[in-house]
Every structure is written in structure tokens, then in C-alpha cells.
Image 1: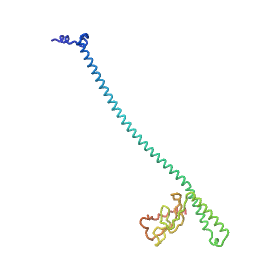
Image 2: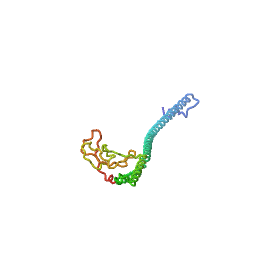
Image 3: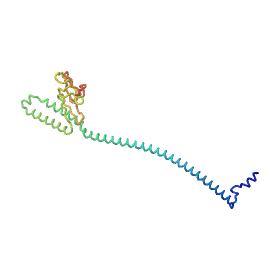
Image 4: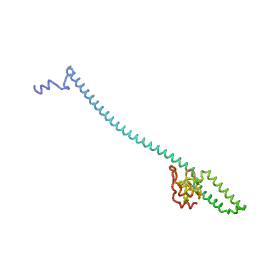
Length: 237
């Protein structure tokens, strides 16, 4: 059979007679196959687009989660910083209120020392003989000194009187040592000048003489060795 004969026996769909039932069936099958193929292609394309969209969404979601975690960490750090700032500010305000008079009080202690020196300078025999002038002077100076110390105490200033106490370098300044075998080593035996504190801060250390040569402090009492003599403390005295 020649090509011309084959072509004549199996004409293309475009050349088929729609009035012929066989041709109509063939055209219908061809159309159905074409529609199925198109639907399959469209479905595959839709699936691919959906997978790509899901992949993009997953990447974007991971990025958002990472960004959210970073923001959460920043927020927590910021909250911690704010809390620390609040505490520090509250502490600074408390300190400012508690210690605002510290420098003034320290200066007033020097005035108190001078008043005591003035009392010590009054001749003892003049007071013993009842000299009215010296007696009035002494009473006036004593009253002034007591009034000044009362005012300082109202503002939180307290005197340190460590006589007989164990030496504490945080509040005492060792000026000299006193040989004494009868008392524990490093016991304050003499107070050359009283110390003062305001709140939990030291305004001025107590200038003391400590024992030397006695028995050691009992274990657990936290024995402290005297620090070096402070020349500045001697000047303040």
C-alpha cells in the first residue's frame, strides 16, 4: 500500500466528516484526551507552584521565627537593663538622701574637736578654784559641743567608742601599740580620737592604741591585724 493510499484510508481529524459517526467518536476521544492532558499539565503546574509557595513560606516563616527570637532576646535584655537602672537609681537616691550631709558632717567633726581642745586648754586649777569666768566659758563650750553632736546624731552620724573592743581595720586606725600580756592581742586599749560613721559609711576612723604581746584571739573571732599608721588620719586628728 502506497503512502497516498494510507493517507486516503486514514484521513486526519481535520479531514474527517463530522456526519460520520466514527469520525465524530474519534474527534470526541481526541478532544477528551487533549482536555485530560491540559488538565494534567495545569494540575502539575499548580502543584509545582503550591510547593514553591510552601517552600517560600517555610523559609519566610523560619526567618520570622529567627527575627522574633532576636527581638525577644533584645526585649529581655532591655527589661533587665531597665530593672538594673531602676535599682541603681533607687540606690543612688537613697544614698543621696542618707549621705548628703556626709561632707558637712565631716567638717563639723573638726569643729567639735576644736571645741574639745578649747575645753582641755582651760586651766584645771581655775575650774577647781571656782573661777566664774572660766566656769562659764567651759559650760558654754560644753553646751555648744553637745548641741552640735546632737544635731549630727539626728542626721545619722554616730560616734565610734571602741575601748576594749577587738581591733577592726574597717573602723579603727592603729596609731601605736601598747605591750600588755594580760589582754588579747589586738585589743583596743586607748582611744586617742573617737571615730564616726554615717549610716554604714565611715566618716572618720577612730585613732586607737592596740595591745601587743597578749594571747591570740580565739579561733573564729576573725582577728584583724592593725593597718599601717595613716599620716592623713594624724593630720585630721
